[in-house]
Amino acid sequence: MSNTILITGASTGIGRATARFFHDRGWNVVATMRSPDKETELGALDNVLVTRLDVQDSESITSAIAQSIERFGKIDVLLNNAGYGAGGPLEATPMENVRRQFDVNVIGLIETIKAVLPHFREQKGGTIANVSSVGGRITMPLFSLYHGTKWAVEGLSESLTYELEPLGIKVKVIEPGAIKTDFGTRSLDFNNNESLLEYQGTVGTLMGAMTPMMEHAADPMIVAEVIHEAVTDGTDRLRYAAGEDAKEWLKGRAATTDDEAFRASIKQQFGF
Image 1 (cartoon, rainbow, N blue to C red):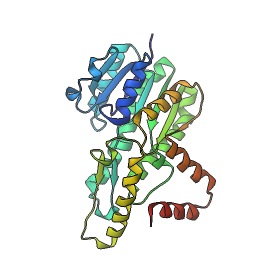
Image 2 (cartoon, helix red, strand yellow):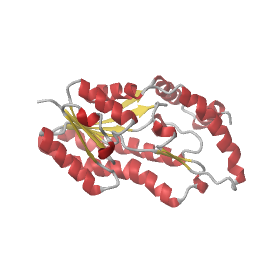
Image 3 (cartoon, one colour):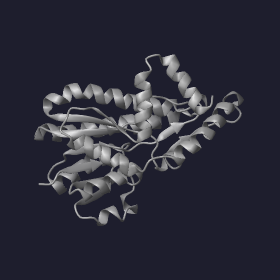
Image 4 (spheres, rainbow, N blue to C red):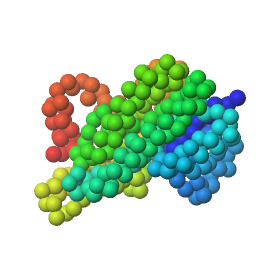
C-alpha cells in the first residue's frame, strides 16, 4: 500500500509544490485548503484528494482527516504547512490581527496535530512535519509576531519528540529561508500607522532591504525535496534547513554565542 501524506495549505507555494513532489513519487496525497472548489489541477491527478481544511475551523480539520482515512486507508505523514506572516510595528497592529496570527500559525497547527494523533496511536506510527522557518531560530526587525509563532512551533515540536517517540511517532521541523511564494503579497499581513512617526525610518529601511532578498528567493520545490528527505530518511533528526540562505543564517547563529553580537550582525545586514 502506498504511503499517504496530508498537507495543510496546499493551494499555493510550498504546500502545492510538496503535493506535486510526493505525487510524482507514488504517494497518496491529501491536498487541503480553505477553498478546494477553486482548485482544478491537483484534483485531476490520480491518488490525490483535494478537500477543505481551514485550521481555524475545527470541524473542517476532523472532516479532512476522516476523509483521508476513508479514501486511502491511513495517514502516514501530516505536513503542517498552512500559515502566513504578520509584520509591522507591534504598536500599530490591531489585537485581532495579533490573535489571528497565533490562531493560524500555532493554535491551528496544534489542533490539527491533536486531531491526527488518535489515528497515529492506533496504527503505532506516523510522522508530523511542521513547516517552521529560519525565522523560528533567528529574528529580523518588525516581524515580532511572525517570529513569535515560529519560535513557538520550534519549541512545541522539540518538546513533542519526548512524548511521541515512545509511541512510534516522529516529529520533524522544516526551516525554509526566503522562498518564492506569496509570503510577501497575499500571505503577508503588514500593519503600519504612518502617524507613528518614530517607527517610519525602521519601516522604510526594512522594505528596502527585503526587496533584493526576495529577488534571490529559492523555488518552493527545494522545500518539497527537504520535506521528502525529512519524512523518509528513517532518522530521529529533528530540524532540516531548506535553502542555501537558511543554512547560512543558521550557521551564523550557531557560530555566535553572544546574542548582542548576533543582533548587531542582523542590524548590519538590514542596514540599520
